[in-house]
Length: 522
Picture 1 (cartoon, one colour):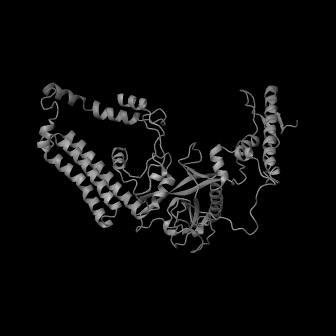
Picture 2 (tube, rainbow, N blue to C red):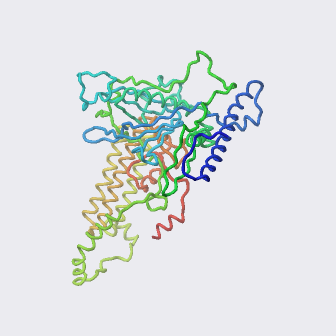
Picture 3 (cartoon, rainbow, N blue to C red):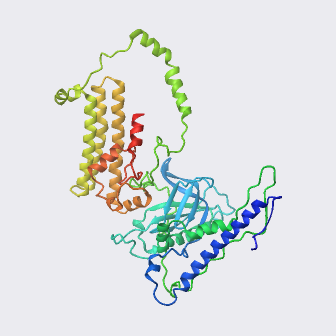
C-alpha cells in the first residue's frame, strides 16, 4: 500500500504504523462511498426501482452548493441618533442551505443561523461611501470602497395564501410591497457582492430541494465527513523534547464527485427556478429613512430559547465586581449609621399589620390596602387591552378609534397607580414596588398595541416572525393574527420577563419542575 507521504519524526515507529493503519482505513471508506454513489446511477438505467430501494433512499447530495465565508457589514435593525441605523462588521458563513453569522471568526458558536428554505436574495443596489476619498468626484461603481453594495435575504411571500409557497417560481415576480427582509448585508466590493448573491441563490435552491429535506432527516452529509477526514490526514503528536512531525507531499484529497448515469438532467431550454431579485426602488440601498420605521413592532426580539442564568447550562457569568460594589456601598459605608439608628430607636413593628380584611377592603379598597387595589387595577387594564384588540380584530371599530382606546388604556395604567401612591401609600418601599410594576405594565401594553397593529395592517409580517423564530412554544399554524388575541396569550406576555410583545415566544422543549423548585427554594 502506498502511503500519502514520508514522515520523519525520529525513531517513533509506533506512530508511523498507526498512521498507516488509519490511511488504509480511510482509503477503504472512500472506496466504499465512491462505489455506493456510482452504484445508484448504474442500476437506474433500466426498469423501475425496487420498493426497498425507494423506501431506503438516501440523499445523494449532488446538488449541494459551494460554501462561502467572510466579513460583511450587517444591518442591526435598531435606530441610533435621529433616525440613523447601525451597520456592524460580522463574520458570515454560508454552508449547505444555512447562513449563519458570528461576531468574529474566532467565535465557536454563531449568534444566529437562518435556514434558507423558501427564501430568496435581493440586490438592493449601492450607495455612496462619504468617507471614501476618490480621485474623481463620481468614481466608478467597481472601485473598492467608493460605494456600499447592499443585498438582503427575505422570505418569499405567499401570495396565494394557501401555504404552498409563492405563486411564481421566479423571485423576480415577487411583490415588493409584501417583502420584509430577514437579514441585510453590505460590502465595499461589487465583485464580492455579486459572488455572495450567486452563492446565496444556489443555497436557496438547495434548501428547496428534496436533498435538503433528506439531509435534515438523516443528519450530516456523508460527503462532509469524507472530506474532513480524507483531506486532513491524522498526524501523530510530537512528544515533549522532540521536533514536530514533517509531512512531505500533498495530502490525498477526495476525487471530484461525478454525476451518476441514471440521474435525471434538466431538458435543454427548460426555464430554471430563480432565487435572485433586483429591487425596483431607486433608494433601496438607503436604510435611514425617517418616514419608514427601521424596526417594525412585529419583528421578534426573542428568536431562540436560551438557558436561564440560574441554570447549570448557562454560560459562566462573573458578577463579583458588582457584588463587591454593592457590599461596599450598602453595608460597609452605612454600617455606623444603621448601628446608631438601631441603638437609639430599636426595631419598630407596631405599624405592621397581620393581614388584610377582605370585607373591609371591598368596602374601602383605597384606604384598607391601596397596594392590592393598584395591582388589581393593573390586571384590569391588561384585560381591557385584550378587549380592545378583540374588537379591532373583528373590525367592530376602525383603526384610528381602536388605537386611541389603546393609548387611553395604556396611559391610565401608569397614571392611576401613580395617583394611588401619591395619595394613599405612605411607605416609600411599597409605593416604589407599585410604581415599578405599573411602569412595566405600561410599556408592555404599548408594545402589545403596536405589534398587533403591525400584524393587522401587514399580514405578511407574522410569516417573517415565524421564519426568524426557533423552538416555538406553539404550533406554526396557530401564530397567525388574530389567533394570537387570547386571554392566555396576553397574560403569558404580562408574566413573561420581557417588554417586547410577539405572537409566539421561543422556549425550551420541557419544563424541569425539580429545577424550578430548587431555584424557588434557594
